[in-house]
Image (cartoon, rainbow, N blue to C red; front, top):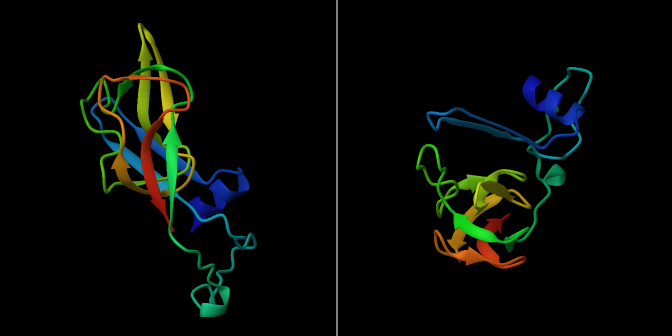
Length: 135
C-alpha cells in the first residue's frame, strides 16, 4: 500500500525496473483516489465503488520509423509476448535505426492480445505493432 501511495503522490501509474540480466520488476497502480492519511479504504471492493468497464482493444502504433525489435537486444527476452500483462508506459517494442533505438511504449494497461508486426520488419510512423486487451 505504501509504494502505491508514493507512486500516486509522484503522479505515476507504474514503475518498472530491470537489470542487464533481464530481470524485470513492474508495479502498476490504479488511478482511483487513494487515501493519503494512512487509513485504508475498507469498502474498496464493494460493488458500489467498483469502476466496471467493458473490455476494449487498444492498438499500439509506431511513434517513429525503424526496424522492429520485439526482444531485448541485451538479454534476447521477449519484451511483450502475447498473453503478458503490461502497464501504461511499459516498453513493449523497440525501433532501431543504425545505432539509435527508440522505445515503443504501451498507451494503456492491458494484456497483449496480438502482435501485428514481425521482428526485424521496417516499420513506418503510425503503423500498428500490437494490440492490448484492456478492461
